[in-house]
Length: 108
Image (cartoon, rainbow, N blue to C red; front, side):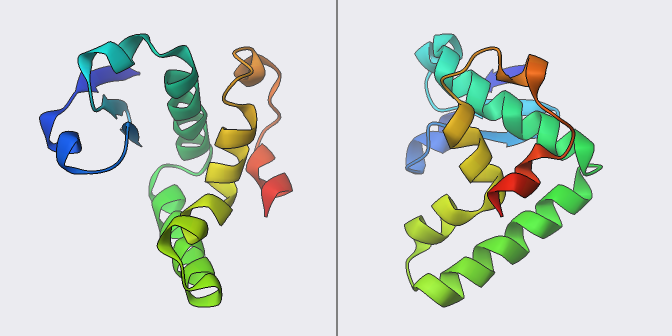
């Protein structure tokens, strides 16, 4: 895991994004945000489990499925199984130690 502060994120409305093996954060102080970093570490684990490329394919397919159904980009994003797992467990800093393989399936 490599955490990088990235200025282009300031143009977006996101605090962080994970693009294996990097975690990009909006602000330098976000590197110390344990909840945000844990959320992004969950995505790193998901990406590794799906051999990275399949994570992105599935993520995009699921996003557009929910966008078509809900007609709301933010709600579609929040319904993606990967995001549901990460948001549900971001406050549990020990989650990745106990997490089962492909646990995001529970959130489909």
